[in-house]
Image (cartoon, rainbow, N blue to C red; front, side, top):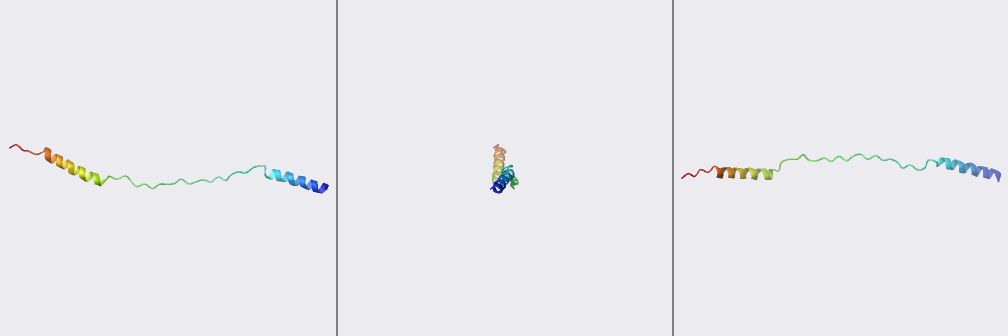
Length: 67
């Protein structure tokens, strides 16, 4: 019985020192996400009508009706 008690005591002490550090969660480093954005461009759907409107305004403003 003494050998068993000594063995159990040694086993208990070695087990407690093996777990003395506690659990440490692994660190997972995440790479940043790179978003590929399109470069900003002018909207041709608005530029062409704006230029036409300016042309009409210029034509009306320069109308010489001196008769």
